[in-house]
Length: 321
Image 1 (cartoon, helix red, strand yellow):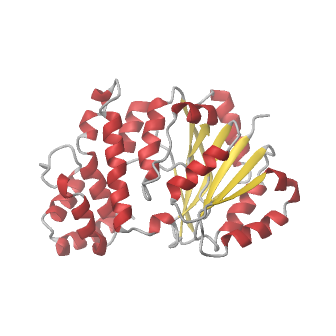
Image 2 (cartoon, rainbow, N blue to C red):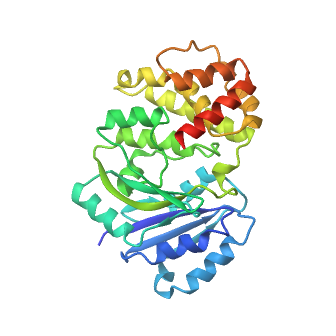
Image 3 (spheres, rainbow, N blue to C red):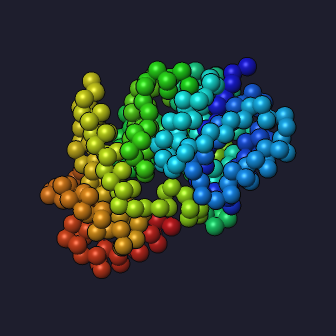
């Protein structure tokens, strides 16, 4: 039977790790190895995890806990997990999230059936105990790649099930200088190299949006610089590939789109740092390369009309829910 490696980075999740671990250990599929990477978490996450492990003796021989001597960030945690894995397939699970009990069984069946390098699947998004299903929108690889680059499709690893041999053969790893947006630098390149991508329209993953201690809720100047570095990695990659012409128009405005995306997902206190990091992109002439909403946000930010931008962002978030 094919073996599945589940890779779980751990940092600041003492409120969530029990729920996550229970969902993993109660999978209906049995041949799973669990790799927990302790990224020097400052709380009781590991103590709680060890307590959960003790309740599942039948899983204990399949569990590895790897300890980073100091906090290295999500990129390094994912790399550590991949390097330690021996499974035929890989699933990344964030430790504040959890899986449906039959997730691995269904993902594996579909991947083997389709012989996919990457299987995309739907997600349950949890916001203050309200669950909303988020469906993967996939028509073909080129359109999906363009959406990933434009921040209109999720680059997250956790709604993707990977053939491990494919991942290893690409040699693509997370750049450990990147503390935020590591998946943005990695996923489009993996998708580009995949020969077969399949889709499973089942919401098998539960994504928690309210963990204020998680990597994504700690936006610092270094995090903004990480996004900028991720942009540079993608620009270099997609301007050098054989079919670069297919993506030239979206790549040409990639950093501007990332700047707008950061502004959309942060408050006013972060905007000066965002503009400073992206200052080399501010001379861009706004044109049809951006949606009308993104043009407005970019123009207001560039001119530092923060009061008006703040009002516009309130309106924007009300409209998109």
